Image (cartoon, rainbow, N blue to C red; front, top):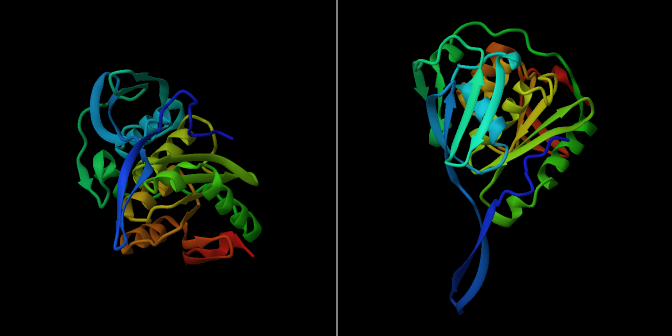
Length: 261
């Protein structure tokens, strides 16, 4: 399975805290997720920047550019370089790198915006598949147990992708949008196909659902809730939208036919 963790990358730091209770003060060591600024460039033109957990950076760069409407197809990306000064340099066969009209979304940081052209227009057919309830149970358990960063820091969103009966991808980040972008970037880089199910610990707002549907993912699941516009986009695209997903239940807001009990 494609993992989010390069062995050499430091993802947490320790910090001694003072715990205050009615019974007095004690000291307790806590782990903090490391948040690092990165700029994203396409063919040497800076497109944007974001605060990112420094792992899965190639995938993040590809997914970020997809969400901004610059990259559309897997074959367009030729090379990605992670520069030590905090820059993700993507080289791709695209005609335009000029700024696009964007819509500011409910997200935070550099990924809290999407191109207007991604929001408008008809959707291409989704990559059809189904998922059984036993698969959903395994998927969620494996995704939530995959990394210790969530329990260690309480500051991490995770995002997994299920394809061909197994967990194919898992990425995490301090931002829910970033974690999803890393999965989408991995698909663009050929590490999985869109013909599967995505699961995120973040809420399914309009931009989150939109990017998943635009890349062709038919089943979109979350541990938390969708927004009204997230549901509207699922209806427009025909995507299966499931929320409050747990190993033993989920609420399907749209297109339940892809869930096989």
